Length: 185
Image (cartoon, rainbow, N blue to C red; front, side, top):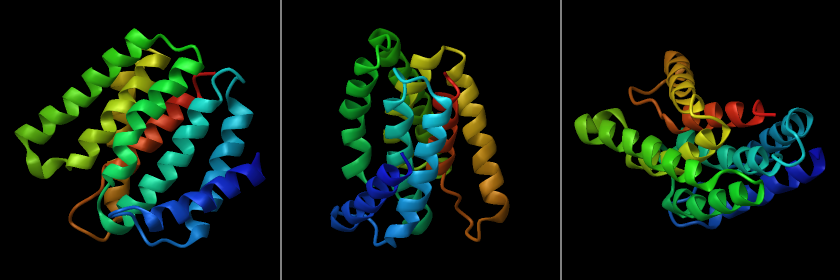
């Protein structure tokens, strides 16, 4: 699992370099964290659910590295996440009605925050919230508010040492959803 995670992360770094508005990142920045997350997911998740935290780990590392380095979440990763996450949830036996409702509720909540206070949240965070909400709702209805709260806490902690005045929320969203998904087993 470590080797496959390492290779997936390294390939992901290559993908980031080729994407429109991707990121020029060192391959180790993606390979090592992906390998660690995949190993943890393998240890903590039941086999039928394992593809969900593996996908979130890989996607989360790529998006986090890009958001921390460039302050954006590329559409080339956030938009394809909708069908890919949906297919993964379906293959893992998730309730697709609940996943869709979670996508709409979590995405809608983030869109509302963006409309009310545009400087509080970026458009990439709103686009990313949909598929993450699908995962959270697939775990449980309580995972939606728990994921939102945990994401906010992670963002505040990140902001306490982040050198910029704008703190990216994408890493908090991704980390919180991964933690909830990996603990679902």
